[in-house]
Image: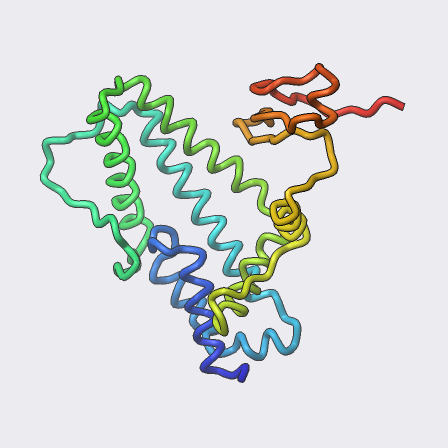
Amino acid sequence: PLNDARSAKIFDSYIKMLDPSRSYFTESDLAEFKEWRNQFDDFLKNGNLEPGFTIYKVHLERLHSRLQYALGLLEKGVDGFDFTVDEELLVDRENAAWSKDEKELDDLWRKRVKDEVLRLKIAGKEPKAIEELLIKRYKNQLSRLEQTRGEDVFQAYINAFAQSYDPHTQYLSPDNAENFDINMSLSLEGIGAVLQSDNEYVKVVRLVPAGPAEKSKQIAPADKIVGVGQNN
């Protein structure tokens, strides 16, 4: 049945899906969201998507804020981290308490960035290389964040609903459904190239044997696509 008990499961699943490590939302965020905890059954029956989109929007805002905070720390230089201080970082935060406010989140993210820096130092990387690597990593996350579309939000929201009945049931957005069909059929109509995002560009990873791209002799692995045009 789709009732209040089901609604609570949908709510808990959605929050866990968006913030599994409890690193973005605060206690006050959860307090605001919980007024909807037993209403998702009614929202779904009435086709009301607004609460789901509102929660996701807050998630995006918090994620953007955290990434900017991490970048701010790194841009000051990794030498500013004091590794003589005795402090701990809880890595598995699935059951951790929600941060009370932004100040607690700042402390958590300071430790997370510090941990990443320490791991790279142990691996033998120089401070400048560590800064460049981590800044690039966080900027890439920001770039992907800005590519979020309405259908991505809808997919997450409806999956929280579907998987409350069966963890193996999944809704796919039109684009993801198309990608799934391509992977299952192992066929693709196109230029015959496997592409990958590389910062602000798209990079050619490999060419499909006997595909149009390979036959053209005009494109090769590691090439970057900087623009798309069409000859008439």
